[in-house]
Figure 1 (tube, rainbow, N blue to C red):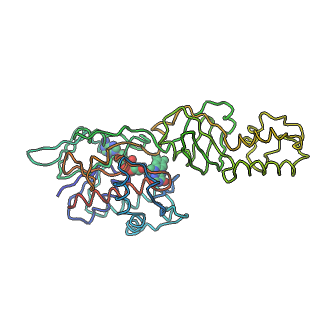
Figure 2 (tube, rainbow, N blue to C red; figure 1 turned 90 degrees about the vertical axis):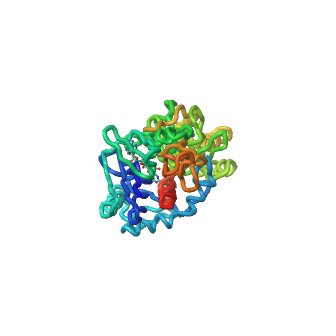
Figure 3 (cartoon, rainbow, N blue to C red; figure 1 turned 90 degrees about the horizontal axis):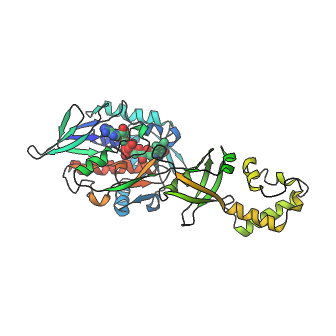
Length: 393
Ligand SMILES: Cc1cc2nc3c(=O)[nH]c(=O)nc-3n(C[C@H](O)[C@H](O)[C@H](O)COP(=O)(O)OP(=O)(O)OC[C@H]3O[C@@H](n4cnc5c(N)ncnc54)[C@H](O)[C@@H]3O)c2cc1C
């Protein structure tokens, strides 16, 4: 049986790895000059490839049951043992799993070396433009501009639209559409937001542990980051898939304390620091840039002892509900994943098209995405495993 895997990213490389000892002729076709361009950038260059703490709440999908059934059938331990089988030892940081050398580029290199030592044919610089099915021969044609490959089964692993400079083209959606699939509209997920509030510009470079929430009930906490004109960080990115634009994000700058406890805490601070000038009130608690912003409406030269109860209450409100008016979500150029894609309802349990037998999908091209923490790569691996299982049957 001849199988072509289109896309040599996380899912395609993993699918090729799993099929390398199986009785089939596998060809992996990648558009870029190298394999795994995006994989080599993951986890801030360290490749957070899975997470031991995995559950339904970590994923978004139009068919979450199917997503979870696939993840549960090939979990973090299975990813870890597959990588161990080619020499990549795991490194655990809590539940987060990285390769021991914590180098995403070298992680990708080890996978490619294992493939080069196998019967899988790996070809780069292959820009696929379409896939067609020949009823006469009952085979697929996988077409570049100048050449046509033929095969019995095709696995589409072309990813989504996020970070086009890593190779994302959206080709998988076009292939799916050409066989009758409807694509769930794609939006950037795991992305930051632009703001145009000039006051927030002074927070550029700030990293702070806080909670982020919205009036619509979205909530997450962790490290928030500011640039001159944007807010990001894992909690912001994790809720971004649910937001389009023009939304006010609220930060809770003391998420471990209730409103009442925050008031008591600030009252104590007033007593302790009473003889110092107001401008120093938050020194030692927050970065100076944030402290200055919080104290904007107070007379900064008077003594801390003179802060009134009303002023203290307004500081509590600001700390617990610090508004960041998000004007626009960062686009696909900056997003880490795509939400939307090939509906899970339009593929079988083995991720085979319901409209064309022999056509399979894996990875981000499908309408499943995860939060930050290794969940997206785990999906790429688990779905690749399932598709290869379906191809072998
Ligand atoms: C900066 C960054 C950091 C990230 N960090 C993490 C992390 O630490 N942990 C985690 O779990 N997830 C992380 N992610 C998300 C994760 O990388 C993706 O979810 C995952 O790579 C998706 O795998 P995929 O194989 O489906 O798609 P991709 O990895 O995008 O691979 C698709 C491949 O298909 C190729 N292709 C596209 N069009 C064509 C065509 N026409 N012809 C031939 N080939 C084509 C592309 O060039 C690409 O190589 C990160 C993403 C980014 C951008």
